[in-house]
Image 1 (cartoon, rainbow, N blue to C red):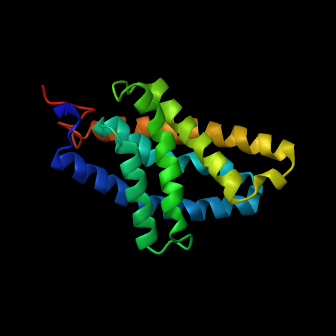
Image 2: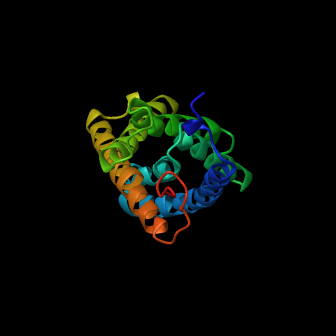
Length: 189
């Protein structure tokens, strides 16, 4: 086994901490989405959807190990469930789908590239996976085709901007504090 892919205890703790922090932030984000829905209608969810991918992007970018995006996605949904999310256990499937989608671009690079293009692709892929999942879960095929196209474009754009670009910005900002020193994003040389 490649020892470069073995997780250290510190990486596991950072991943767990990211999952817990973003699990609570995701619960708060639901409230923001519900507020926007009152103002903008049903498309509001797709406008803000990308934020629910940001923990996965940050984890992959910071830890730089296989399955970091998926693992933190699952830690976040477990936190949401334990914190009392009204969505309940279905979030486990939601987190799995979104985490796998986020992981795909890193997998395709064999977890060797963590540049902006790959991070943006991570947000886009999580959007694609989540769109297919919600298509099935919420019977999107019954909706008007123009609405579906708008939802798709907004969700992918949100994934790219909030899931990908915002994830990089947050991680780069936190990196400046020294908290990530010794992790994949900021190795000790």
